[in-house]
Image (cartoon, rainbow over all chains, first blue to last red; front, top):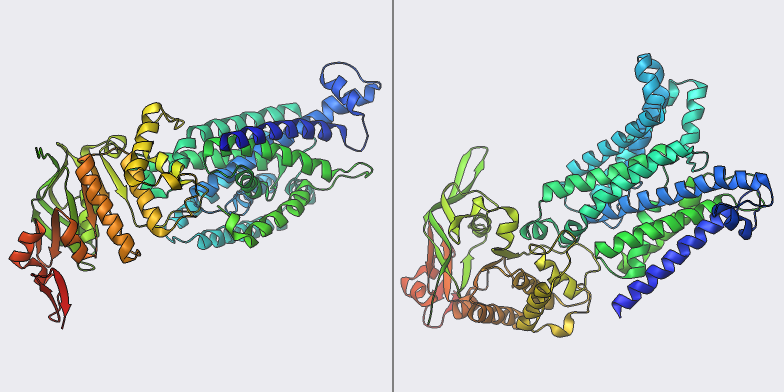
Length: 341
Length: 261
């Protein structure tokens, strides 16, 4: 029975992903009929040349970006929740996104004070990714260092919160000293945006996501062992140190690369793994991994659809949408304390 | 009939830990030998160093002197995975929140044997079912681990250790927080397991009177002395009289109980 339930949910989720993709590509400031979306995606031509152009050069890249972001953030959330034995862990809550922000702020606004050859590299997309990943890695390592001491989960969250405000304070210091142009660049980045990414950037993001996912696949079994706590995991032959490093590496690559391109996006990393656990009623990471991948992609695509509702001639910042959707989910999870597992 | 085999042994073992002010030795010159098919309890007052002894015997902590042999290999020479195939633990710590079912929890005991994805082979399945049958928890397997009582959870954790299929199982205070009925059933289960599976089972406990009745051998830790023997011998040696550093608690050897004056 349990197996059947899993199969049914996986089929439904795959179907949902296809629908969400189609919906995402069809909706936008210009309404394009489903039939033409199909045609265009399958290599044919639509009734209008502009539609082809919009679909292939604007909407398809955006949809793929949304999928990658949804997957990356959700999986990093799943990894962190098990590593920290804390249901409230996630890249945003624990300050990873703030770490990334700090890295990016440093690069975008601090470029002026650096030697020019360094500055030109850093402002390039590679530089931003590197800075973003390093920023999130730094915060993650700090949290890990602190979390070794106090055993209860609350203090880890508070520490994450403190890191967030610390990094945002540093960012404020940076903004104070930067030019209007730099400031604007950073502000737009920090509002989060998943459109306007050129194919080359999507390629980089895809590679980072795949690297992160492959590492995550390698730790699926250790993650299961960690469900009993570190001591039990060790007694079952787990190399705790290696596992920890792999999880941290995967998390910072996933959260760091996503944040580099799309800005700090809230709540996806926290809420999606919970929805997956709720839906599949399991803790087995082999199942949760794929469930989280599918669910993360679907939810991010839907959030993007909402952020540019048809009929509106503007696009809301994606970060606002994910927070509006995600915050109530988290509150609901906490109120229903039983379901946090 | 009784083909006993030494599973764990120590030679001139000294345990303790290093502090800022130098080395603090808890006990030295320990020559213990734990045999297969035996249920052995470890008793002693709070703070006497039971945990340190267990940590040293399980290889988590280095001995100050001497060696711990598991099988015929020094315990610190084991690879993590190999050690997990020879020694399983039941700990006191609370399990983190998760959706694990009882079956999944027991199945985790097979991790030292499964492939990189943790896929269960037929052999794994049969070991798991054997553990479930031995502990008689077949009716619990589909429940979530947080839905069952503390006593049941303790037995499930013992089943997990069984599934790990090791010659030695060490349990850290498995009967704490349980009522008398469940204490007794855990003890009886451990006794049965040691007899039926031939495993060596070592556990620490504060339920000394029960331990005296059910263990094959006991390790009694007192200030300056660690004794390993059969309970009746320990009683006639008067070891239990000095267990607690308090004149108002005395041990009645004929009844096997402690008396408070």
